Length: 72
Image (cartoon, rainbow, N blue to C red):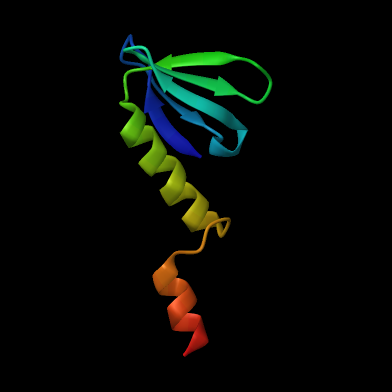
């Protein structure tokens, strides 16, 4: 789960696995796999970093350093 901020300042938690698309128009719009759209105050790059960190935390993405450490 990642914490994001709506345009009105309300903080909410989103299951990052449900994200299908992230766009800036200039507001960051997140499209979920069910078609629902969320507009957030966070910048696209920030959301991408939060998603990447979440995926690493739950083991969906392994970093290159982790791969190298396991092969030693």
